Amino acid sequence: MLTDLEGLLAWKGIAVLAWILAFFLAERWRPAARPRPPKGAVQGGWHRVARNVGLWLTVTVLSPLIVLPLTYWASGHALAWRPGWWQGGLGLALDILLLDVLIYWWHRANHEIPFLWRFHEVHHLDRFLDTTSALRFHFGEVLLSALARAGVILLLGFPFASVVVFEVLVIFSAVFHHSNLRLPAGLERALAWVIITPSIHWVHHHAKRADTDSNYGTIFSVWDPLFGTRSPKPRDPEMVIGTEGRAEEGFLALLVRPFRFGPAPFSGPQSPRKS
Image 1 (tube, rainbow, N blue to C red):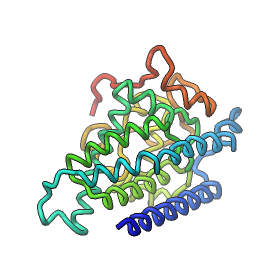
Image 2: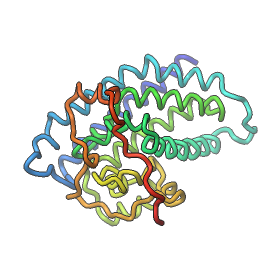
Image 3: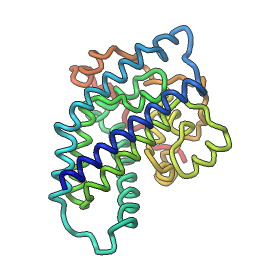
């Protein structure tokens, strides 16, 4: 069992690194948007990439120490309530669908609950979007997400294999919809009916609060229209990326940002959204 688990995690790591590298190279070959002058060197340059990768490395260190053991423990102690037919390929498909709607609500909570927004805002402060933006999360957000996910696994009985497969799909999806790869318009429109594409998710990173607090989907694009959080704004390669009224910060400042005293750097819920 341990050998199978190690093999699964090894293949996961190889697949994720290959996917990231492929999009990192492709988006520099066919970019959809270019850094905005006069700060282009800061917004899209190698200093920004290094900052994002640095945040990713802090999370990568935590994963085998805390996140994976916690997830594995939760799946081994989950409530055994599932019917017999919830197995195999059908069970995996249902697990992915259920996990995706749950991550929609978790992502939305990260925007609407001030304490959670303190950590999630680090992701949104990026002033330019590309593949590395999908890796840019504060370690505190990852730990909180792992705790919330463990609770869900315990209650809903998700097997460890389903969680690992879902994690791979989440990373693949995040790299894709954060990427700066220019896609054929017709292909992107067709994909957007089913999955989250850059045309959908870039609006979520628009430095305008009404758009930042919208388009919460991760894999499937059905949840935002269903729950009334889809922004009508079309993607514009020239749109300003970031958090409205907030400035990007250096690597060390981003690590301590959620723990600063004072008013919470909070986007938060707005007035009821008009459909």
